Image 1 (cartoon, rainbow, N blue to C red):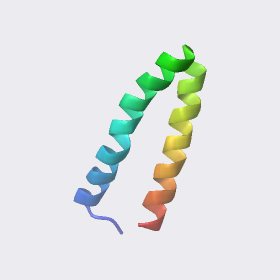
Image 2: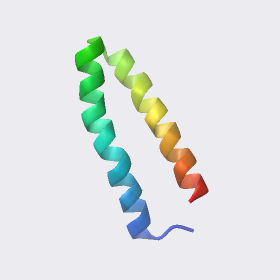
Image 3: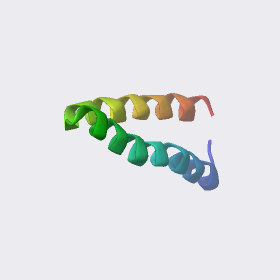
Image 4: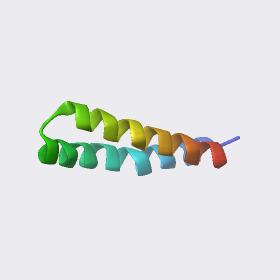
Length: 53
């Protein structure tokens, strides 16, 4: 079981790429559909990482 500080750390590590990367994906593709796909992939990766921790 993860403690609070570890959960907050994972949130920060995954949150920054979600915000910055989402803007970059939107700038390149120009549509929110691409951003949703990117965010979904990032969410799945974070879930796998959190499950192994």
